[in-house]
Image 1: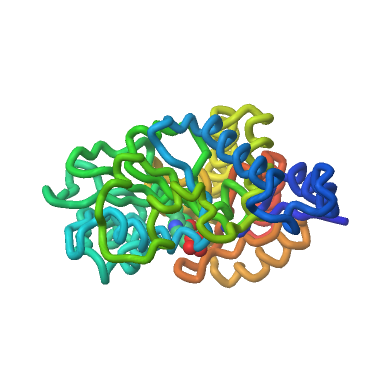
Image 2 (image 1 turned 90 degrees about the vertical axis):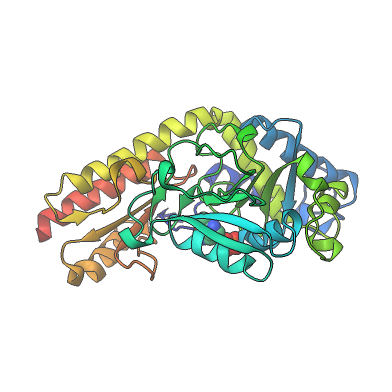
Length: 361
Ligand code: PMP
């Protein structure tokens, strides 16, 4: 068996220790006589797994008690629609800060429900920077203010939490959740698909301040209602048990490795290694994002000569470095280096990049 270093943006690499544990428990989980995916989500075995996952995530992210934590199906995109249905009156204003592709898609999902206002937009600059907070034109009557903490495609990441006092702050943390310590109490709601930093695709984490659940929102089915999901402990219907279980294993692994403080150190080192080799390449490689907005999770870069792209990707794969092709929206390359990407993987990538430049520069 040869596992490559996998730089996929998501579904993304998982910790090898977690995959090995899941493999070992595949046929029978903890004396249950069946695997965790073959038993009822309402039985004591799965309930234990679910409760531990929530407790571990609360510990990992220091989530205050006045926040509910949900494990839902549907992906981040579904949450993008549900936030409007649950927290805004029909046609009410909702403020959106757009710093890349995913901020734009978030608006697409709420168009039928709210008056989505773009209060700051990095598009004119090609999404290479974050519009300064002082230039945001927040509405006085918005139901919430939404931003994307890390833009997975454009590689643009907020440093710190923006100061917003006009409405509760909602954030898409799909590609940077649990990558560094975060003051959850500054938010009304955080959501993140698990498939980048938390585990497998199929489960989405929603962290929501409980008082917001009292908002009336818009006419909607019970299954689209966060309040009901909280009351039903994320089990209104059959939850994605396998994904929830695997995410739980990732939380335990992260805690054992030293928690988010340790991962933020590793992520800083990993991303610095990559940006250093790009910036030091004399233009052979190029990352166009403003230095203080550069993502520590997704590093898009371009070769000075696009004709070399195919060779770069082929030789990288031969060297055991896979999924480096950039998103079709941007082209070029992208290295996604989430929590589960070991430092050795990034070291191997930068060594390959230096060598490739030497042979082709
Ligand atoms: N937001 C961000 C920041 C993302 O990176 C993605 C997926 N790449 C999404 C939202 C959409 O997530 P999902 O596919 O889970 O709906």
